[in-house]
Image (cartoon, rainbow, N blue to C red; front, side, top):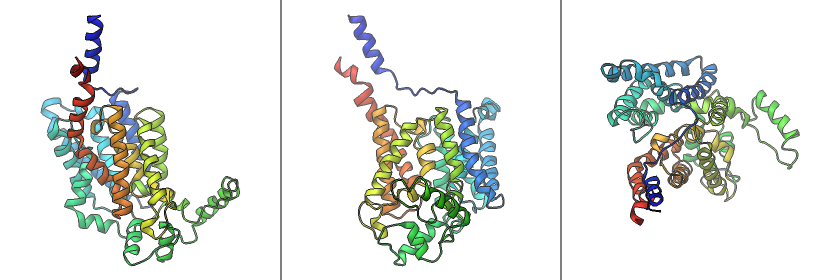
Length: 363
């Protein structure tokens, strides 16, 4: 009986672990493929500018990784693929028109300061790609803003600041009203797919998809690469979820909570009423999907218990809604994730006190 009680206490007091079905290297390869799909889609419509940004970020990350770890591990540290994935995810967060040197320095900061100054892979308190994005967003703010001129979100919030609104609370409608939305009637591709969907799937519930939404999947306007390559990102996200690279339920919970908040209150800032929020536009812009599938699910910067993960994911969705819909911050999902990461050390301390040492206190 005493032996069984000792085993139970030992099991409760074990450090929390995260188990995956694949090795670190294979997970990194699949995550890199996910990011590359979006980068390639974006590069098709910008003359390869997105690939140049990716190459610059890769060069900065790989060279920094080699410089820091060469004398200790040689090139073996690069074999886990974490530096490459961090550079590619960072690329997704950057505008396709950003100066490639900015991407290079952001990747250097991500590797040197965020990753290795805290002990290397798995020891960082914030995702290296997100840390590099914050560094570039603050240090090169003018370059960042200039690179986003003409993007859908910059036009949207500038139009709102000028007094534009819409009774239905549709951000896409405000873009059309402002006269700057390049697909006011929808491109030919948008019209073809929209007519097909409206005559088949949406005809069943009697709904109709307005013009412009299909174009969001193939945007040719400036913006962050994740939004420009949203179709490739979706395909890659399905790949990594099916391959158990991340815990898909975390992404689903984040999107569920954020989508509910957008639907319930997201139309209010745009002049609409409660219950009219545009969930589809919010999901397909502002880096929402890259945050849901690649940033929120990072095990190194998340809680260790399922209870903790649920709490942090819900808080991440709540802050994303507040920053983006209420605060009109274009990429509120990234700031929300960074804020949650900042509380991570304190949260893990609470987990050890109230969850993982429960058996010891009871003894």
